[in-house]
Length: 495
Ligand SMILES: Nc1nc2c(ncn2[C@@H]2O[C@H](COP(=O)(O)OP(=O)(O)OP(=O)(O)O)[C@@H](O)[C@H]2O)c(=O)[nH]1
Ligand SMILES: [Mg+2]
Image 1 (cartoon, helix red, strand yellow):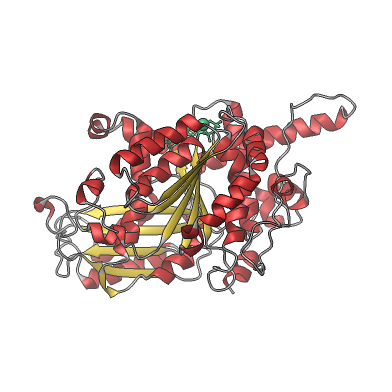
Image 2: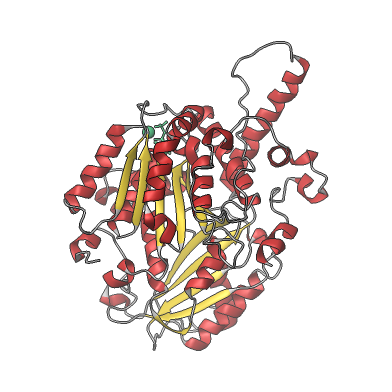
């Protein structure tokens, strides 16, 4: 595909990123974007040359996205995408049940279009992208994830792990209860989907973080009209840059299969990026004992402070990390020996976590260099893919607060069962067993009955997640654990 330079020019990529690396990213990723937030994020990825499948209940939102894509490529010669409007609805007014009904009512149309969309089958990995605060994206997440997972049941990684993940934007902290309840329901669903091996990793976008990063930077507020425009570029940029990094020459290679070994884990995946912009004269500049201590601090920062999409992950709950260093062959800020020190520091740093192995790469910039500005000639960049078994702090607090509220209401309701309070207590949607991890004979979706994929009976697995105190597992009772995934599950998956 020939994407012209100007089409990538609006993205503020690092200097080492060449068009060809972005366009022919090592990992062939495809994206399914639902609702307004999901489709806006996916449209940025379409602009970078990835395939995107967009669906919405709101035709106006779809027209808006389509107009933008057509203004870049009027006859769809270069960009690859499909846009589907669900019939019978004009938006889902932030009501996830309505979003889910729209998906069920349109199941034939969705199945037909999904089956037609070859890139969803052929990609190495497919991301389902939604914002969790609304009705359409949120309400459809469960069924669409199951559908894509079933479609790709023959493309499992290592024969067992689904090559489907979720990218989910968590609403701002100032949101109303209903919006936070939407998000919490969806996060509970994501955990259940992971537990049932229907999806792999989930990348959480903390809208609070993106909004603050936008507001606190004059450059950003000058350059972008809205925080979402800025935020969606940040999301697409980090994914494309990491994929582009995989293409570079290397002395130690972080390859495609290592990336998939991380993306297919049933975890919350944090993406980090840290720049090192000047050479350090140890002892003199640092006031520290020496190199080792300096890099130990540096790696601590890379893992905890330089998350691109969400802050507040707890390193004790980290799992198999991936770290890629991008630098010039003869970089002054980071020699090959120092890169190895970094690797050792990384291993030490997470030695008390549950991690079982690490993936590490030293990749070299070719034509343009790592840096954008010549004054930063010796810059090196560290990219981190860090899986976590626990939600980041702010989001975890939101989920616990809302789950507790729901449980409290439920306990009250037990005493007043005869009184019908209508919709006061929302049940959680259940993942049906219809989608199993065994590949189906045909990659057809006909036997998939959407109306059975999201019924509202409480089932045990999900109850366990929502009420960890009911579980037999002592560890999950202290509330300090990731209740749905224990190491047993993980070893099984990895085995
Ligand atoms: N990161 C990001 N978040 C967004 C964007 N647009 C909306 N949101 C977030 O998404 C939530 C609303 O979800 P939408 O995606 O607009 O809702 P929808 O899926 O279209 O659902 P309905 O409009 O109810 O049918 C809000 O809480 C916002 O935080 C976006 O472009 N980027
Ligand atoms: Mg909408």
